[in-house]
Length: 84
Image (cartoon, rainbow, N blue to C red; front, side, top):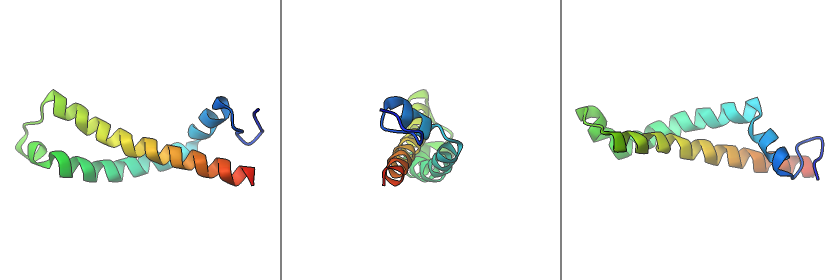
């Protein structure tokens, strides 16, 4: 079942997750949290200029995690707000 506000179907969830406001918020969270985590976890290699391909991939994933968590949280909050 899909309501006009996003509903509970997979299509509705994707529609909410791709809203400009949700993506913008998730991007901002990912930049801040990803930068902090990236520096904490890989700062020594970044400053020394010795980041290899494996570390670079891990740094990229470090930004993906907060983006995903923020998007998921926003979707749940919007669905809860629209349901009640």
